Length: 394
Ligand SMILES: [Zn+2]
Image (tube, rainbow, N blue to C red):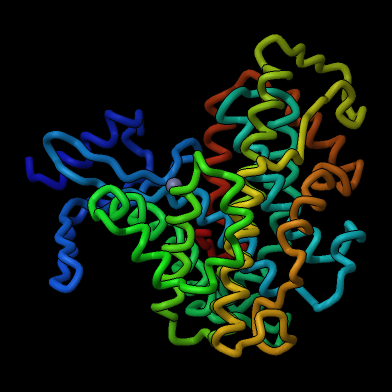
């Protein structure tokens, strides 16, 4: 067996990834730099798994393995692709559940929430809201992905994002996660890594001293975020302006914070309403989720503050370079309140659904309750949008 295959087998065993669990083929990497004395080699791969944090680990046999989890970054990508397409400069999406941006954000947040419940327990509520996204709500994404999905939807909007422009969002999100993990590796390997990062960011970093100072026990997370931001902004993608790169970074971390909050909400919901003891009560159709209880929206202070720290850092970098983060030109326009806006939006994602749709999905959920393999198949299948005749992976 070749070394790459051994590394793959090691990761599958270590993290219980089933044979069809998505794991990219590990490739060897070496980072060497005479100036800084860095010389690190190891394996790089990526996993797609709803439960794993991005990881960098050392194995006695295989050495360093860096494996960012693209599950989180792919949800962030979908959220931001929707933002890119549907944000129209005003705040209606926050209050109008029928606004197309609200519908798109609700789809992704709710789908993530449902998947995070279902990986913990197959309760009726988790199945029903997952079905709502799959059967009735994902169509809001067809125009966003029209260029990928086929010409069928292509005339919806003149300034339609190209496949390449969408790919930039995906690369940016994966890059932020990967570089954060590399930050942890460098922090372990290089004596003066912290000083080097702080020196590089100079005055910009002073602006986030207060937020950072409130988390002495998680100081390395802030350091690695700052490193990831600085590194990612240093390698801008060709078709992004400086302003767009700044906004994309702030949006990415705002999305990560919101998704972390939903992971936490799913944890609480699954604990309070475990599926196994639940009576599927098949007679009780179209009753609008009577008895469903869920807990949603609590942000963890650490995740919120990480997103805010990144926002402050990027604002300071933009100011130093004379750039406008919150201008009204170009893509990814955002309000400075984006982190709070997502936080306020989260508790509304289960609301705003047509009650007939909800009733039908509840009925289907009761029918499918207990058929775990069938639900797992639908979750797996939902990773591929079926927009008309041409299928497209998200
Ligand atoms: Zn970390």
